[in-house]
Image (cartoon, rainbow, N blue to C red; front, side, top):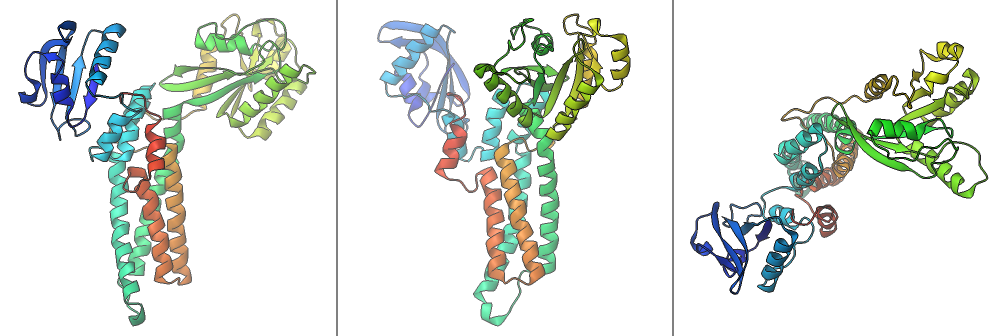
Length: 432
């Protein structure tokens, strides 16, 4: 499909379309014909026409459905550009929809989230946001705050008369209510972030413990090189899989050991960095080359990181029975090469991540930008409460309330800057 939007796009397409007169057809209609460059037929197509105010962008819009050949599409696009069209910028269609009031900024961002959704939960969360549930709640909070902000501003005009239009008890109750709701949104980000971005899961351990074999087994493909030679993996290898509707980003890393090899040492340092950033660590132990005391020392280091972890004892098929007996209650025992107990490992992984199924209408924060704005709103409202406790004058209260309104307004686009819009829409793909 080739999509055009803009005041003159219907007239432009009519110059190359042979069929009905597109300038006279009703909106939301589809017409068969040919696209021609002079007398030369490029393709038979279906052309959909949308009139201003009724299209996705709220401008006149045309969609040309052609045959899927890259050559055909390229010729049609080149012909349209020759007639006066230009390539869309990344996200420009959605940006125009925002600028014309068809979507607010949070809804526009949800369009990109739908496109990139990899799980049903991620898709549903994005759909809920695009349908405006999240924006509706934010706008409701802003309206209530605007009411009190205007009353306090009015007080400032009568500063010498010592009047109080904004009842402080009512303002305090409102801010407590708003902060309670914002707190629930902030708390939802942990789940929302997992739903949208998946769980970064580092596979770590000493060299030759079977980390790469485990990664290949989990992904069901030969993603990492497997060798009996210690230190084979020297850089981070990353891939993703879905477990029970949750995306896990598995990261295979270099084995943890002291080494004089410069390249391997860099890999070991990257492993430690990845472990600090991970949401979950799968720590693989070679059962044929360890002791309970060594495992205890490794687990102490893991605890000090503060990241959730699962101890995995690999090479179960060759382990000593007495070692298995000592570890069976605290370590997930597997054989990656023999595919033993892999389902038990998957269950252990899922048990560390708690994500509820997203239902229609659920309001979740999945966007880091929204999360940061909510934190800043919460801080500004806290300053208002503290100010009222200390008897702060209305001009300082008004300043903090305006800050809260500003941060809330940035979420939906009631307040925007060119830099903000550029940052958001530049991440879209072209044509969206």
